[in-house]
Amino acid sequence: LLRWKSNLTSTAAVAYKKRQGERINYRKLIYGKDADKEENESDDELGGLFKVLKQKSEQSDRVAINSTDCSKFSVQKGKEWDIEEVRELIKDCFVTGEWEKSEDAAKQLQQDDDLYGDFEDLETGEVHHEDSDNNDDEEKEGDGEEDKEKAPEEERKKTKAEMTSIERRDAKKKRLKDAFNAQYDMKDDSEFYDSWKAETEQQAKLNRAEFEAMEDDVRVNYEGYRPGMYVRVEIEDVPCEFVTNFDATYPVILGGLSNLEENVGLVQCRIKKHRWHKRILKTKNPLIISLGWRRFQTMPMYSIQDHNMRNRLLKYTPEHLHCNATFYGPITPQNTGLLAVESVAELTSGFRVAATGVVLELDKSKQIVKKLKLTGTPNKIYKKTAFIQGMFNTALEVTKFEGAKLQSVSGIRGMIKKAAKNPEGSFRATFEDKILLSDIIFLRTWYPVQIPEFYNPVTSLLLPKSEKMKWIGMKTIGQLRREKGMTAPLNPDSKYKPVERKIRHMTPLTIPKELQKMLPFRDTPKIIQETKDPLKRVAVIREPHEAKVAKVMKMLKTLHEHKRKTERFKMRDRAAEHEKKMAKIDVRRVKKHKETKKNIYRALGQLEKKKQKFINTKD
Image 1 (tube, rainbow, N blue to C red):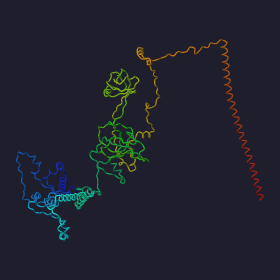
Image 2 (image 1 turned 120 degrees about the vertical axis):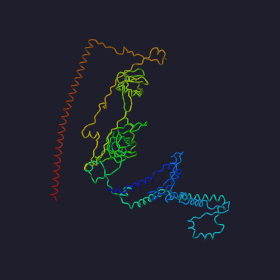
Image 3 (image 1 turned 180 degrees about the vertical axis):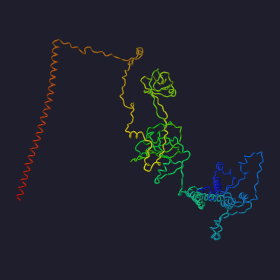
Image 4 (image 1 turned 180 degrees about the horizontal axis):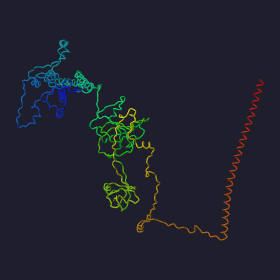
């Protein structure tokens, strides 16, 4: 069990050397390779697993030289050159040492010969021929001599001295083009991927070859746990319900969280209702969100950003549009996807995923605002100045809104100036034009909305096996009302009421007489008073005899009308009795008709029987 405590010193030394080899030289990255020419780094051994550390001279270190005082003479301790290991450190600094291919003088001279070919020394007259490569000698070893013997002297290759300047320039261009084609054009598009893949495979082979002989407990310290290995994980501070209700058939996934993700705060994300979900989502309704390694229930607030960067609260999510959602939950890195469902316990036939989204940022300074409309009525009016009451309660509230824009129902704009003494909460305001006492003044403003700090992790793994899929967290208000048989409260102000408008009597337009005299005749008011014709209605005065006759005629007319009315009622009664008699007659007629038909069909049946009997006796 305590095998990991063995060889701690050697393990720490190897880890330290490995970290030293993986250090990034920022000076070399910033200033280039010239800044580190003095640092001699050896090639990687075993594919980058181990590196040979070389001692550097403090005198050659620029940082150490600049750190000492220039007025002092620093006595540097000399190296012990008698030791073989110390001499090996500077062996490669001389011509006889082993250099890299890009720095070896012999290699570079050979490349120059290959590039420029033969040339003639003009001072001595000696002609230098190109030194043929070993590869060319091997390829032409068999038939090179025969070709030289058979080739005529005219067809031999011209030397550089025999070529003209144009021929030498063409030959040089051809060699450079061939070198360029061999380096770039002849390679496939997948060369980088193939080289990277080959390098990776080579590194993996070296790692396997290096660690094959090690035991698993030692090997894990270097390369970690390999895929396919069985491990034992001990988790601290686990609730006892997780152990008592543990179900081996239910998969459990372990995940790690960074230190930042353990905090809880406000998270802003861009969310969209899933197109297959039937209902839109309501603000402050509990929602179960799967974000990263966590699944929790929270109450999101939906908003949308206006053109002036204001986050305006939305009561419901848009149907086919993205919106912002702000909720109280675990701090999660940006661009992390999330998935939301309304419930994990209900098994519905519809699509269960309610929304999908992505985390945007973790900015607590942003606020979600809601529209607020305050109304008031004018108390006193002085031309373009008016005193408004009923909008605020105290003078302090008025002071906060000084300079805010007002507007009347008729469209006249204004501004809040200062608070008035009486009544409490009234203020003085100026308008573009004179307003009326019947106008209603309103103020459009915004106020921040408080986001509920509700975060409830889904603890379905702590429930028994039969209740794992029945976890229920916070319920919505609609669900609680349905369970209790309650209806939504109705605000009396939301009901439709009959509008009773006062009849306004407009005062007639009066033009002063002095002004009428100054106006032309066509613009003067031409008001003609209506005069009633006295002869239109003549009063009738009857004689006593005529009055008696008219009275008798009126009485006779009344009696005649009464008589006609009684006759009309009697006629209706006679018609009703006649209808009853006719109904009885119709019933008797139908009954008699049925009996007659029955007798006829009975007689026809008897005749048919006699006829059939006669036919049977005849046969």
